[in-house]
Length: 125
Image (cartoon, rainbow, N blue to C red; front, side):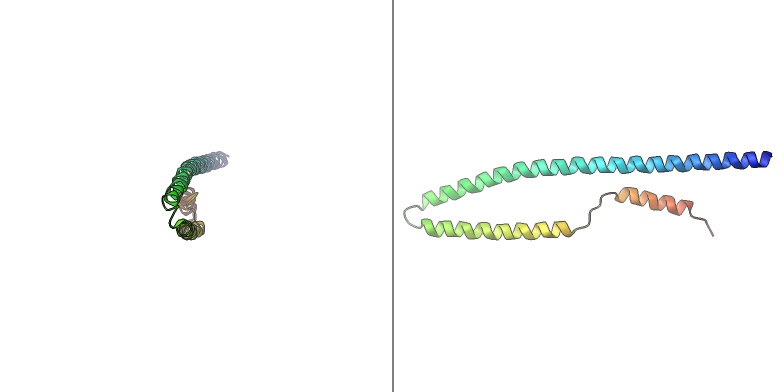
């Protein structure tokens, strides 16, 4: 009877340890999700503000150069800026496609920790 009690206590301790490991991994996963959410929010905010001001600067530069050449080459200047903006848009589109194809590193720490746990819990030969 004492042997079965010792076995039950050992199983309870092992189950408790496994629950602590699972809880730690879930907390780590939650922290990673929160960090990624905050990072994406900051990227979107700063990116939006930068795009707004760059857009305003480009518009004002275009108007400035167009007014500067109004009497002599206004259509040539307007066509040149149109071509420049089109090429810039194509380059940005290609960069967006390249970034979208890259694999995200989200949850990499949690997955690595779970792999370590699996290796640790695997039976040894």
